[in-house]
Length: 378
Image 1 (tube, rainbow, N blue to C red):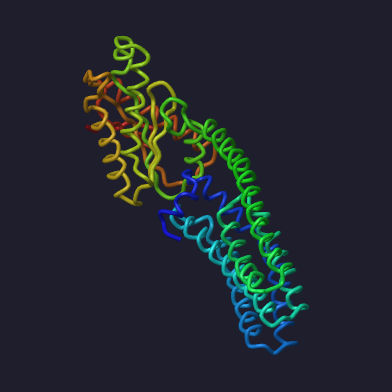
Image 2 (image 1 turned 180 degrees about the horizontal axis):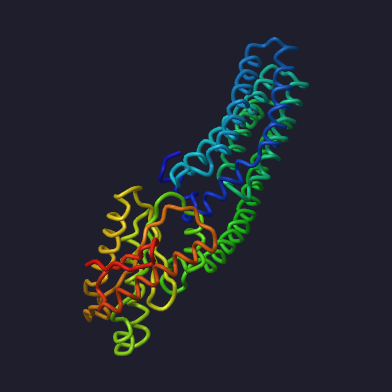
């Protein structure tokens, strides 16, 4: 399936997309059960009939069954480290495995019809229906996977039924088409309801952890990220120097617009591996991993200076250029943190920020964790 076509079925929210794929890969007991039944049934037909077609299909079912189990286990091992692109790839892997397995079961039914093997057709069709029921249970999660796999599952049986001269076989083939369309409608309704619930859940979670005005993570999200951080990290507190006069002169709407623009610039400064957060009012925080050793302070200072420089550039409020400034307090931490240690670091970096403000603003001030002194820098 081409990327353009597949993109129609990929949810635009990476967090929801990841959760959906996680749910796909929770089906190990179900997969093991249908694998065992399919292998038993296909091998039994191959042994009893010694037909090359049955033997080839049984081998295909065994190989595919092993591949599906391996993919489920490997996803569980690597899920926490996957990128958004990797998650999309694993969704395709699941779809490919499910479709290939459906094709093998459909081929088993087709071969039974070819051989006029009524017991074999009964066993094969029973396996197909069991697999179909199992796939329909995933319809709310990824309906496109279910519809693709069941279409491939039914296609060989449909063709075999239409090739028979007896009317009941042809009617049975037509009923399979109607059955697939009923699956499609059920999948659409189930998926719509399920996705809406997921979106509502993620929206509530975002409201709890993000600032409603700027869209940046809020204080709670920042503290959680700080407490969970490892290695050397730069912590930078930023306060706008000229926000209140702009807010008083141009009004609260202009002030809100200014804060959103500030948030955008700080998010760019933090980069994809850092975090910019709004603590409230015109106070913001930056958190970013830095190299260890002597380079840590250099990287942290460069980041603080870049943030101050970026916020000193003109902003446009209703096409009116406005210039404000910013002050920053910063420190580097390389110790593991508990709640008390986090509070102490925030107290130190706040002290450094206010020292920068008292010095006239537009500068960066270090918080020295050893003696709680402050070191101003340009």
